[in-house]
Length: 79
Image 1 (cartoon, rainbow, N blue to C red):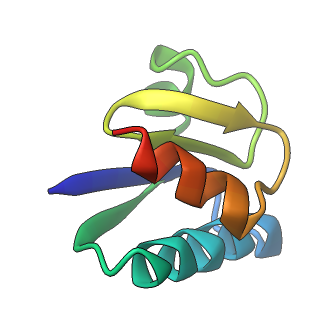
Image 2: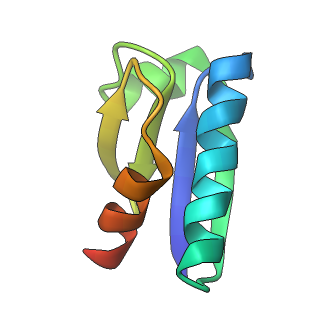
Image 3: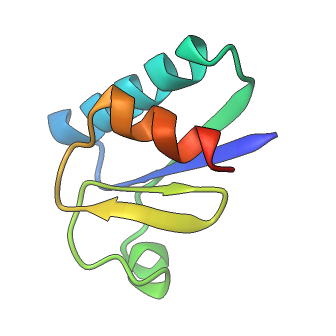
């Protein structure tokens, strides 16, 4: 199963990353878990220095921006 983590405090930008992630999973007809990581210590421990950020299966893919659905699709296809 694919695990997507969205790092941030639940701001509108973080919600948009979550929404785009759901759309990407739906486009590829994949099952996946989307987890919000809001704990600052956890975020820093993972090497995230700017939010929103996204990780796919443990690998941080983007920080400080909202990735497009097509970009998330390409990451999911590469896993």
